[in-house]
Length: 201
Image (cartoon, rainbow, N blue to C red; front, side, top):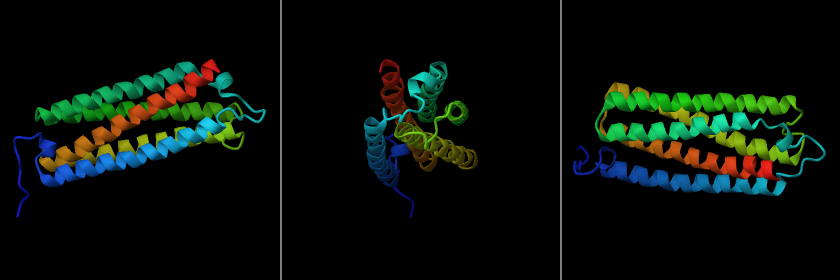
C-alpha cells in the first residue's frame, strides 16, 4: 500500500514519512549544535594557550580565510537556488546548482587543507600547544562535516539521475540543503570567534 500523498504541500513534505524524516533531521541538527558548542567552548578556554609556540594571529593568511569564507557563503546561496529549482520541479536546474554547490564546497576544502599545511610548516601542529589542539579539532570537525556533506550530496545527485524528482528524492535533497546551510552557519561562527577574534586580540 503506497503512502498517502498530499499534493497541496511542497514535494518534500507530501508524505507523512517525509515530514517525520525532516523533523528527525532537525532533531539531529540539535545534537550537532551541542557538538559544535562543546568544541567552541573548548577553544574559548584553550585558544590563547600557545605555550611559547606560534600564535595564530602571526601566521594566518587572512586573504585565504576570506576566500574560504566566500566559497562557503556562495555555496550556501547556490544551494538555496537548487532548492528553489526543486520547488519549480526543474530537475536539470536542481542538478546543475547542486553540482555547483558541491564544487564550491570542494574548493573550500582545498583551501582549508592548504591552510592547515601552512600552519604545520610554520611549526603549529596539534602537539604544539593547547591553542592549536583546540583549533585543529574545531576546524577539522567542521571540515570533516563538509567532506561528508559533499559525499552525501553526490549520492543524492546519483539518485536524482536514476529516480528523477519524486517525494523521496525531494526529501533527501531538502535535508542535504538544511545540512549544508547549517555548516555555513557554523563557519560564520568560526570566522568570527576564531579568526576575527585572533586579529583584534
